[in-house]
Amino acid sequence: MTYQILIESILANWHIILLFFIVAILYSSVGFGGGSSYLAILALTGIVFTQIRATSLLCNIVVVSGNVFLFYKQKIFNWKKILPLILFSIPLAYLGGFLKISQQFFFILLGLTLLFAAITMWVSKRFVSSKEKDIHSNFTKNASYGGIIGFISGMVGIGGGVFLAPLLHLTNWDTPKKIAATASIFILVNSIAGLVGQYSNPNFRIDWNLTSILLITVFIGGQIGSRMSNNYFTPIQLKKATAILIAFVSLRILWKYIF
Image (cartoon, rainbow, N blue to C red; front, side, top):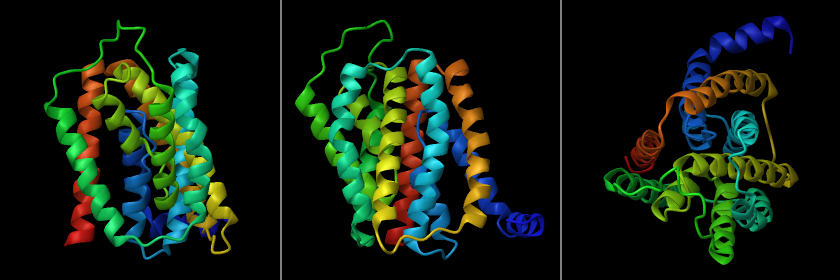
């Protein structure tokens, strides 16, 4: 991409770039990649949906990679509980990414599900204390959660964090910080698998002129957001912030696909 084309692309899409930057900061601060919001923003541009999904997943990968690195350095990951979640999610995310899907009904259902999860998380005063170390893990349940969420995520072009995090919070799966870390690694592996699945589809398309700019933008935003999370958020603030973010996404999806 030449310098002139780069400047023209930035000037023509400055509002999209700004929104991606804000989304990357907000989502990375609670361990998410922002895929659902990237989809919503790009849907307003007129870009074909197959291209939108690929761009969204690439941005997901860039944002959560920084989170995963920071969480790994802090030794927050509980691999015995994480591995069952991603064991089946990876192949099913690939399959979901490969499939062609219809959007209308699914996004309405998605919006209602996320809104219910957000409200439940907000009103619930129960959360796992950061001092609780040994929290029971069920391999079958974790594998089921991961497989189902991975498949759905691959279909629509998101990493699945907006599904996984509310579910783990509502079931008191672990501490808020460990749930954020788990959501990050889950989003990363599913975004990669979903992207590979889309790439295998003959209809795969992507505009690298705009996408390369967006990748740089979300990388910077993701680095800012992940450091905000690790330095400034308490466990209960992390849970509340997650609920607000999920509610925001669900209402935007419902507004777009119902009205």
